[in-house]
Length: 122
Image 1: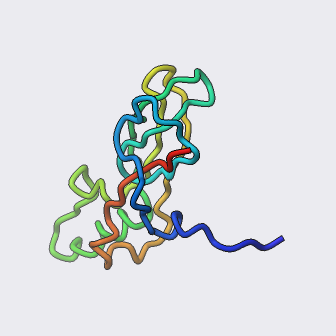
Image 2 (image 1 turned 180 degrees about the vertical axis):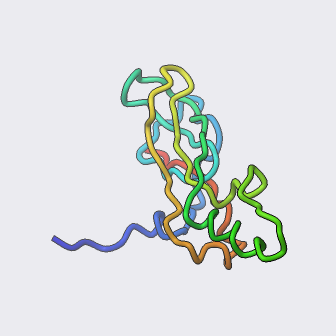
Image 3 (image 1 turned 60 degrees about the vertical axis):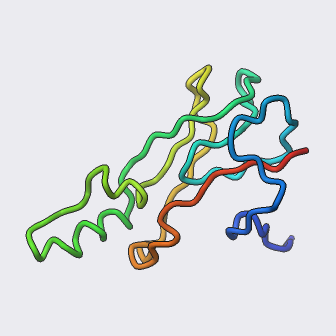
């Protein structure tokens, strides 16, 4: 079965997107990216905003290797925009989603380094 690609996963942000705490707004779907996301926790039922942990990605390693010729490596928190992001519930601390940056070419595309998470209201 092949369906049409989800435009929200491709980077389109709808005008009615919720970016912060939903505060009672029913959420239909959450798009997890680099920033904390509004969500409904499937584990504890909490509604709120996730907290994010980061881990190095291939893009971050390539970002480190490019200036390495000058003797400098930027594989540190300053390159956090190229790291994988893992979203956790702020109440029960369970992992709810991940956003992995698998494209090593992201190093050459600064506008795509940080993508905001959002939710679609129900």
